[in-house]
Length: 291
Image (cartoon, rainbow, N blue to C red; front, side, top):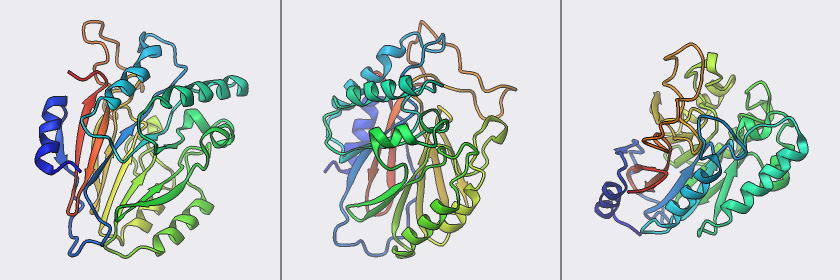
């Protein structure tokens, strides 16, 4: 696996920003812990047509080419929601999901995972998403790290809901308090900008369940930009979008896409690598089209 020095060198080539997320305090690693990395992509909005991205038919494909060109193959890839752009037509929704699934099949990594965004799931409680991508929330383990994927979008009221919160509590109960835990969501779990739907109404209940665990990081999408937040010792990191950037939280009255810049196409769009090591993780942001 790539070592720290090699990973930092790779980030410099890709033009990404690197920082530590703060998964600290592991006194003794579990036997199966080993350095690895994964890729997060978010907010593809396949099916979008509009001025905010006149290249919308090409952006996802460009991102896949960039991911496939990475110097080292990631252990897995996860899409954190809004795979497709919303539509009231159930038939069109499924067509978009089928096309999205066909496009991302070009990724040269076998383990590709998905969670829904509200554009995928809010209008039908995740029914179409489940047909194409499976469960909307789940957990898995990889090389000593426990991963939890949450669904805070299938409920039209932007809630996780009591059933899922009970599932989360039971899932966490199987982990030691110093376990390394990474959570994926679409919306932020905390109240970033509720006026803009940048919140989860019962997200504080999920955070309360996570708080006793000393090494938790949350990766999410939805806000179409990088953003970093702490709730106690839990770190939250938002990913860029693959369709258009959005303004800084609360910086204007309405949540409207930033204008497309023909001189700098794909500006503000990108994907993320996360290297997971024994004591921390390193996050590297890449543009959609790498230099």
